[in-house]
Image (tube, rainbow, N blue to C red; front, top):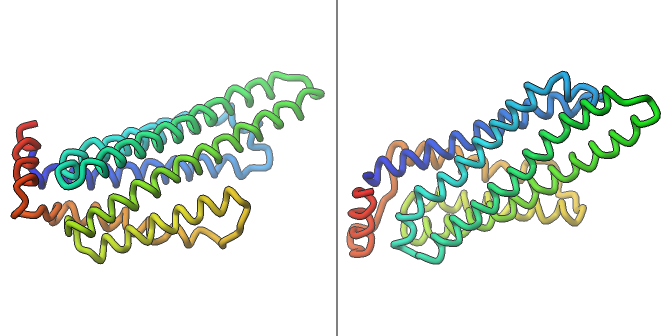
Length: 234
């Protein structure tokens, strides 16, 4: 596998991850924002199942990014390579737990529709717990994403694997993501979703750069040349 092919694969996986998660979020929010969302969940189970599958695709793409980039980063800094793949695996697990909570809402909705009137409040109570669990799992998934993204961008900046301006945008984006997530845990209001914008721009521009230019690996590094040789033979 050549360096250019690996870079384009990583770029494609970033796009797949972003597109699948945003599509799933849109499908879910269209239902969750309804006043009678729980009563609507079971009748719209196919929509929620599709959203769950898209979130599974996102988690698979997240792991795929880490696996594909690992051989490249390893030769520059093995500890960062190991940390990146570990944190992204944790992110994927947290998001998949959220998928389970989402699918569980379908069963609760079915039970609600089959239940007698006195039991209605109980099912809404369970649904609220599942929604809260899903939100917490998302937040817990964003913490390892912010941490591993930050250290990866430091590596990008240090070794000039991508333009330094793009690396700085990534550093800012993941730092703001970590700030937003931690502030939410402590119920500190830092405003709307504008803190997500730099990170979103980075994860949009990075794939475009990788498709066109790939990674600029240090030609004078013996270890990097050996890494590329091994990577091409995979």
